[in-house]
Picture (cartoon, protein in one colour):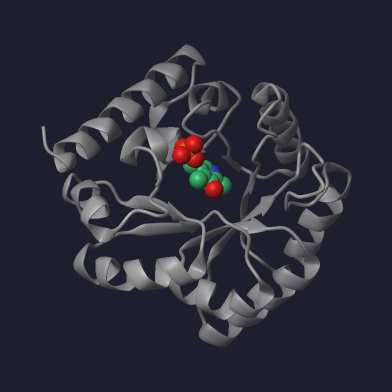
Length: 224
Ligand SMILES: *Cc1c(COP(=O)(O)O)cnc(C)c1O
């Protein structure tokens, strides 16, 4: 079997598991979007996914995405590119130009910069607020206690299109506690999108209401 068959079959298999998990949770499978995380992989691994009809992808670095995606976006209609990695304020302009969704809005300075660039470029990019549900020192994301106020600030002060919340649970902890916490924060703030779940735990995330799961390894294989 060649690599491109692998990738399209992996996508089908993940979609199937998402559908099964959704039905088990009495949810509509079409309410869950698979974000195929293509970070570190070259165009030759991404194109088979595009050829198979997949359109939603995640990248964690602006520079890397800039090298790969403008040409792919020109060649394939309807690409929906998500930034899932931390964003430096000085890269806000490049991020607004290239990405369709920014999942890692986590501080007022960044939110302000994104709002300014969207205005300047006349381009609205959906934003997810990243919440540091594990309150880990080294991890980005707004602390859970500050989430309500930050969501309100993004909406009211910066007029950002807040489409969802995103979290990355601590590696050593039960992810469901974090998924449940993110779901609660979303519910009480009237936020509809929930980006949570990766290769190891996306089915659990679907049970907790994920609208976006970010899956890399299970589709593209191990990163070098
Ligand atoms: C790399 C990455 C993923 C994908 O992780 P896998 O375990 O390979 O599925 C998901 N979310 C974020 C934020 C990532 O950086």
